[in-house]
Length: 466
Ligand code: 6PG
Image 1: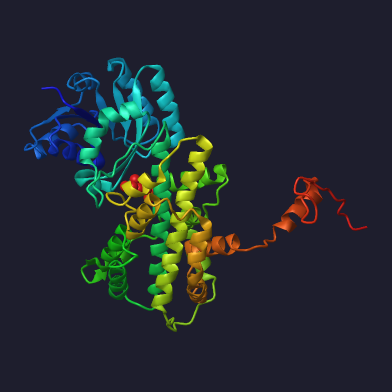
Image 2: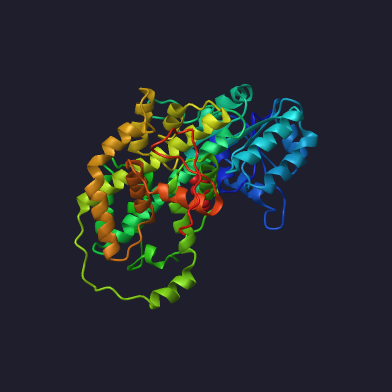
């Protein structure tokens, strides 16, 4: 019997997706290369999961391809980057026109566009599919963000929508996102939002642990998680805080150098290129980079004035509101970036559907995402700055108090400050950018506009004071 679906790459995610597909009743073929260190991956996988009788395993590409019904639906769950191109090159001689390759990794959306165009010229369909939810999501229902052509999506929709997580109305957290690289673009922004959400929690942890112990912080987080601040990341953070190894907290044993695989910086680069101020996710990326300078930090910290041991008086209600404020800004910036991209690239993305497929299965699922999804459905959203910013007014005092409190204990709040700065500037009728214009004109004759003249007129001044 020929398989309905093929998965290439039996890493953690590939294994989980394969079991998910198999469990949902679709006969599946899996392939992993035979490579030093990976000789028994397929054999071990089949042995461990022998009760899944509709899985066929291969270490040879041609027989893997031949084992599938046409048009073949081949899901790549391998490392993003060159490995994808190499795999495509190896697959091409065995494929037939109309076959579909789905890249489920965190590929860069511009690479996806190139691969889409290249494979189209060969008569092969290519779907760049963001997949979120980690190992557990992949196994029991991820959020999926496929981009390509609607026609090729229609051929895989039954399988993808069956294996995906379901929203609160039972609809799959998988939808056709849009053309070529758009699926990977939105997954990249999803990750940018994820970076900022993680960083905000990290900053809260730093601030709260000046006064509270980990159990106490976890209790607050669990309490918050019952209300409008509910999120998957808040919940796992509360669990992490409570994890012990013997008498010690495991968290205290972890080296404080944050790593990354690039999607956060890609989001920030996309924002820079598209001219959209996605300041909060960028600050989260830089905070990770700063953390990596551990050795230098140790040296410099020894040269810094020591603070008194006096405990900070924590205003938990203010901190909670500051957190709510920063999360709203983060989501506002993330969705606005997607909107900017859809306008510039003419992708015609449906933001309401995106918010909906992020309500379950993915890492940034949260009560806020649920609210956003309903708002978008009613044709309202938080990209409308005017309403969002009016709403955020109520948090002003709490945010500034939280930031000042943190600074008094030398706690860096990269992402909170970034959210606050953005909000202040976006709600300022006058900014000092007039001086930037004057400086540009001074040294480079770049010209400036005047408030007392027509906006189409540009002026240059000889600035040298004689
Ligand atoms: C997801 C995650 C997933 C992965 C990140 C980690 O949605 O399931 O985003 O894709 O956890 O890629 O990224 P960093 O290694 O860059 O933190």
